[in-house]
Length: 155
Image (tube, helix red, strand yellow):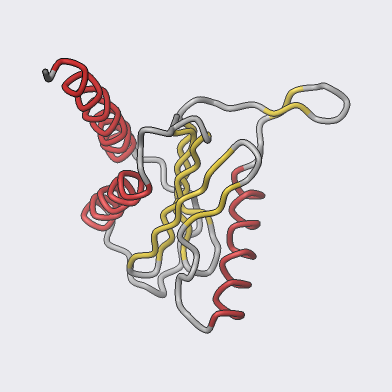
C-alpha cells in the first residue's frame, strides 16, 4: 500500500506532503501520535546529503528499505520526490513506483513554476495537485489489479 508522498527541495525543505492513509505510530508509552513530516523530511535530507557526499554522485539513493516500509526516491530539477510504501506491495515493482514518482514530478513541475534556487516558505497545499496524485495512485493500483485478473482469466 502506498502510504505517503513527500516532495523536498534539494536543500531538504519539505514543500509538499500527502498522507494517503493517515498512518499512526505508537510511542514507547503506547500513546498514539502522527509522525511529523517535517522531521521525517529532515531525516531524508540528511540521508541524501550523506549518500551524495560519500558517493560523489547527485541523487545516488533510489530506494531504502526499513522494517515495515520501503522508500522510493526520484530526483528531478532540484526536487526529491519520495514515496513511502509498506512492504506488502509484492506485486508492484520498483519500476511501478518510480514511474508513479515521475508522473507526480511532471505534474508538479507543470502545476508550479519554481526556479531551482527559489525560496519556498510555506508547504504547498493545492487540492487539484493532490487529486492528481490520488488519481495517479489509484490508476497504478487499478492497472495492477487488472493485470492480476487477466492473468487468472487467460487460459
